[in-house]
Image (cartoon, rainbow, N blue to C red; front, side, top):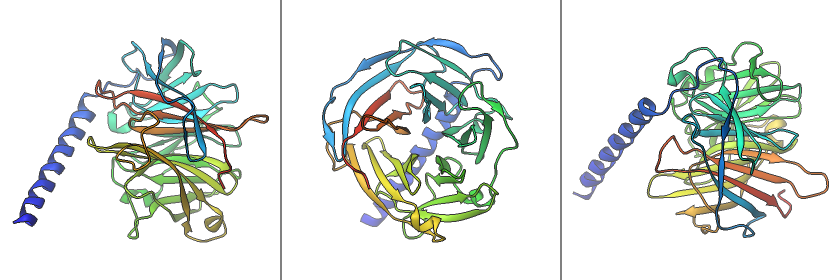
Length: 330
């Protein structure tokens, strides 16, 4: 009897998740009209509690809730840092947002890409290459787009990057995380395509196009949502747990040396976790954390910026967290 009831509950849960997904894909705001010039938007940053608190090797410098009257604002899923201190984000609707933390305004525009449907424009990660390009990872139709320069205007540079291995990735569980190594190789991590042993499924794509499937150590109960290169052999990965009943986030460090030497598995270590149901405390604000950017500073500790995806929902928030790295990570 208990098994039967469990099956019924599982079926109801699956139907509920399917209904939420359908409503979200149908009702979320459309992208800004393609090729529309960049335009300025107002941004309000309301401070949140927790500044100064420490979890693992990180100290929370600041936490804010970002809002804007711009209807396309929200859905921030990927984050990258420019040398001048501004942050560039991409959204689930295929738009970009350029802003400076704490500033009262920013700029928005549409990412130039083929297709205007919602499934064509689901941008999830952004990264810069050493040769001056901006890469954007999209899911549903799993691919990576290349643009000239670091930051807007995002002018297409070459054909989209498709890989056969991504055909097995779930439509809404694909290339959520993207990082670029110093030689131009890509680490492309699937959100929800775990290997048989529970490890994260990822691709190592060499500049010449040679692709290898690799496994990255997971954080149990969490899904990867973004990544940033710490150094030539280490990757920082942001993870989230967002179930409605539980909202939590985690950061891990991954050792890429074994896969760069030809192996298939990259070990990892949990650095911090927080939020409801995380087992790591609730010192820091949390929502659906999806974007991660690393800022290196010559005379001060490096900074991590984290941003949350509000799914264009009034029930969620766009949070921006600034973490200072106060202890060695390796």
